[in-house]
Image (cartoon, rainbow, N blue to C red):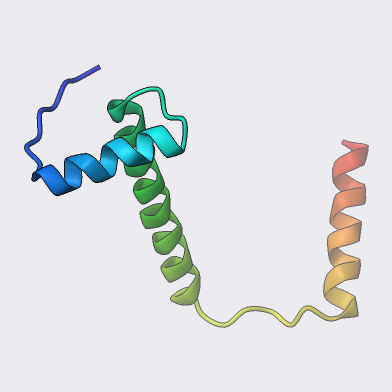
Length: 79
């Protein structure tokens, strides 16, 4: 695991210390890792949403669509 040192104003350090205590994080590092993971997940979701939005129009989800999905599921369960 890599180590990273950061400098923070006293106000931000106090805020982080409060968050660690209030949310029962084991350490400041654990809190910051959680924040970074959450931001990474947000960026990944944003990318997936944009990809979907730019992929063109979708198919109408009518009775025929759902019947086709059920048939595909039946075929997979047989395999």
